[in-house]
Length: 323
Image (cartoon, rainbow, N blue to C red; front, side, top):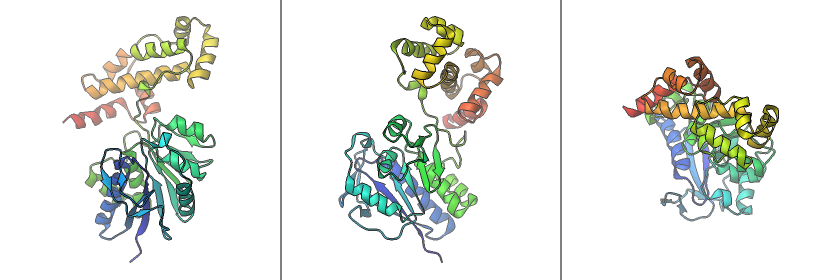
């Protein structure tokens, strides 16, 4: 019988508990599905003390970064709401560098990328993280390609997951890699989670709730579009509202907001459509009409581009959740 794969989940102070318990439950269920200890999960604290999670729960980790762990397969750093403002712990970074060098694969869950990226081991890689800290991660580490809308990103030995529950998506993907599709699907079914979420690996992040970008006039325009997604928001109409020529407006908008006006309008319309479809009162055809699309196909194409799922399938997902 082969030895179990040792997986380390590093839990920084104030860790998001589900970043640890979610993946741990996936690997434990994989063990039950195959009838043997395929995985041995060890939690690692940054001090030889109980870890206080962001929820107020406390747990005693199996090891700490004071310990040397010579044999491991996978190393994952869990996230914490405190990491964005946390001081750099040079001992923890050195420990992560040394142990990741022994691992077959390594990475992070949620905002754990903010800590792990400081080791330099993610440099030049494609990664994801919680959408709220994606911009901060990219700003602090410009060599990274941060895919803010992805649930799971794999780039060579680096495996990263987006916010909180996406750690389970990553764990299921690793189970599939190690033990096969059938085991991964059985684990997902037992835990009542998606084997692969609708829309592939796309986060259903709430970009429409993010703060508007750019100068004041552009921010007001973005708020107006979000509040009135069904109106005429062609470049010409938006430029007129902003008091600019269409060409100058399109150039300024792209530079300051980071996307074209058409892309922004589509994102706001998809966001509005999602809310209406989640309510379950409107059909995709009616939602498309409310948003100014000529027919349902326009909304369908926008959903496929942004979420990788059709409006009808998205609505069905929430219909199941309501029953």
